Length: 352
Image 1 (cartoon, one colour):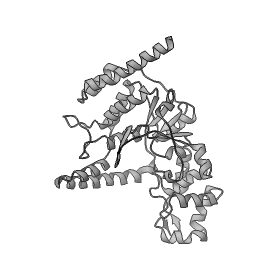
Image 2 (cartoon, one colour):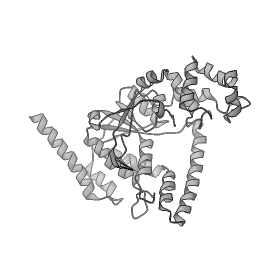
Image 3 (tube, one colour):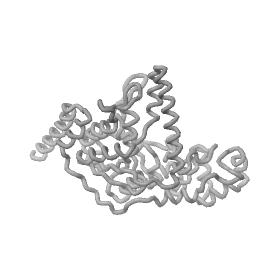
Image 4 (cartoon, one colour):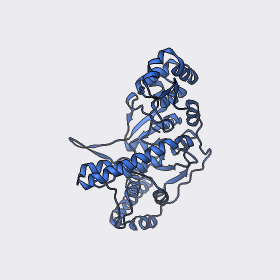
């Protein structure tokens, strides 16, 4: 959804061992998009088998989740359902962006511009029904719970944490905070090492706690949602032009309620210059219906009382799914052996 508050809130770096025996609800689409954009060839093309089937998402789901499983983390992947009608404009703009990136990629390819190919290929990412089906099948045979949300996956994942079904939500987006997720973990599904100018550095998960955010920003939950609307969400991309997170926060703090805030933006003399200079206003009125957006965020379409079932890991099925896409059977077996060694060590410790 795109809540842009990263520059104004604190994050606490944690270690993977801090999540041992914890259940994490993963925003599935967010994680899979990460795999599709980051697990690629130098020219930007995704990993593929000899038949041309994209396998970047399967590689990420298996290898990175296996590392988490070996750390003792239990995972629930929550998939998006039907997108709210308010999101239609966002979907269309993303389709246009993909078309533009595809044209630029082809232009870079004709010029043999490897750097340009890498840049534009990553922007042309989409998640179709085939990839979603493949992802669910692999996750389930890995012993990972799969939950199908009726609406936004991040809203459902946040609700699972609120119900005590999970410890935290894993997502790169801050939107889960607007959906009242008590704890948000970023960088959980990223590669453990990141390449920088000076070499490689280790990447650790970062914990963001909602109570701490509200206290640090000196706002309540209603004001946090209003801040998101001002900065822009998937329901009103771009928000109010001319207002970044710092200016938006300052304005949000001035008003006691959402009604007072948006009434002032459209009618108060104090914001007359903003109304005149920003193309987010038409005859002094905002281009979006703030109340409709607020209600969609405050009362999202989620399933309540979901029973979480963790399936048994099926090693043979894991191998069957991955080897049909030409994954190395030896590499798969090495990961599964690590799990065996971990279980054996646990058994010995318990016996002792």
